[in-house]
Length: 277
Image 1 (cartoon, rainbow, N blue to C red):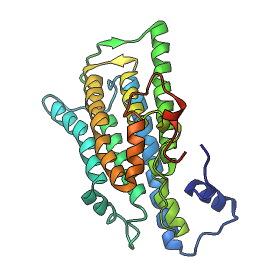
Image 2: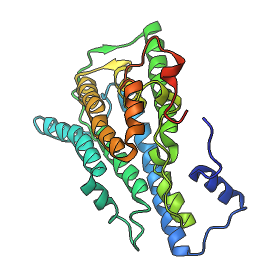
Image 3: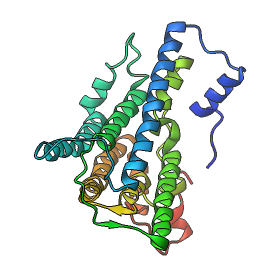
Image 4: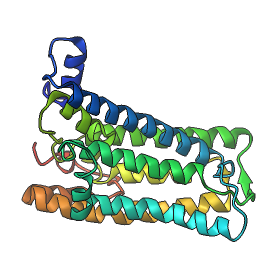
């Protein structure tokens, strides 16, 4: 997949190399850097917490509540992510995001704010969970290494899918990178290349795969896997309705030629052509 010279990532690289000076405004630049640093630190912490917690089947999280409060708190932790995540993608949620930054920069920083909130939610889910203390199965020997390979592959697939969708949006970098250059955020085009050539929702599929390829199984992991897999199956429907409004016939053509989450086992080159080709 080729990357335009005018993408936010390349603009930031140019800025870092000193060939492009940011517009004046120390307060604006400082705000952009603060939001960016906060977003990416929390994002990295959330990803690390997810990888480690699920690798151990949610058996080593830091929650210490006693019954029945542990059940109530764990249930709230499971629900808070899909509910808030979906709300913020709606019209009212997007309006709220635009008010979460000072000096009228909320709209520009909305993608950074959104990624930060989502990262806080995931960090809370995977660090504050109270484990049941029950372990059903733990992979050993050759099975352990096979499952670990599958788990690593699922995460690599998720990284690839996120890159194909637009890494600057998925990571929250688009907002603060645009603010530091004093430009309007330029969103990537409708994703239809890379993994999106084969299925319409590779990010959600990849994330679901990370939930089921763990070397330790507990009741906690099963609850997380079932709940978040259900979200991965249902949430993209709302996203696709938004794409339908934005891209119209172009998305409809893509939707008809590309399966939702299960790729065609036998497909022709014509089926893999994107709407732009």
